[in-house]
Image: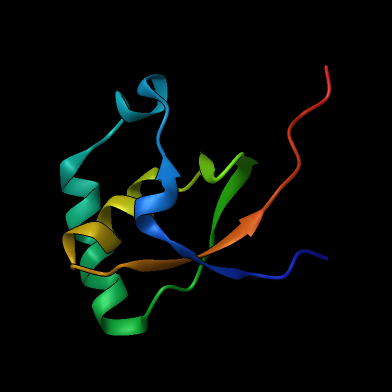
Length: 82
């Protein structure tokens, strides 16, 4: 079972293809939810040298940025083997 880790937001890279799917209205809704309940679902990242690459959780990541947070809960997952 994966254990959530606290990750520095500045160390997370968002691939351009994933960033194009951003819905600012959804970010606002998630930010409101985080203010009320905290971050309930960790994002998923994979290691890439000294940084992490976002796998899942773009809207949660952007909501935390909008709230001025410097860290986020996340799972470190392994890259897919093709």
